[in-house]
Image (cartoon, rainbow, N blue to C red; front, side, top):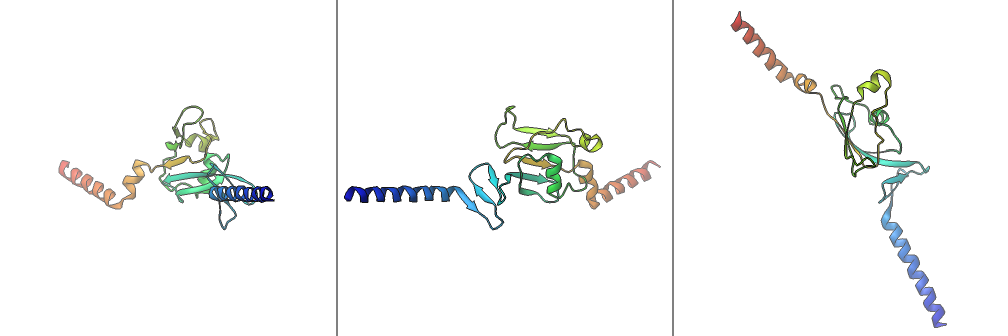
Length: 163
């Protein structure tokens, strides 16, 4: 009888330990997404999602859960697109860990894709990648009305002096 009681207590302790272990590694949110300590997530429908960070000159920068296998143009579309003056020739993709090619940083030019659909320089997006889209230097200068006004005033003074 005591042996049977010990077996039941041992079984209860094992079940409680497993329950505690599982509850530490999984969190559920109101939107039906179950987040684990893994690199991949699933939504309520079983779709596989990954976390991507997008920074820079885009409409909705920040951390985004997107479908696994998403390509860069689709990701940019999902976050609302680039802002006017975004440098689409030098998009940086930074890995959280070295990939199979032993790379941490890629520079991607989307201009050729936008012009003729060329996907040859695309890189697979992996979990926890960070995408950085910077503003072009020309847009930075000309978007500041004070800088443009100052440049035009200096040019007017120069032209007045040399005339």
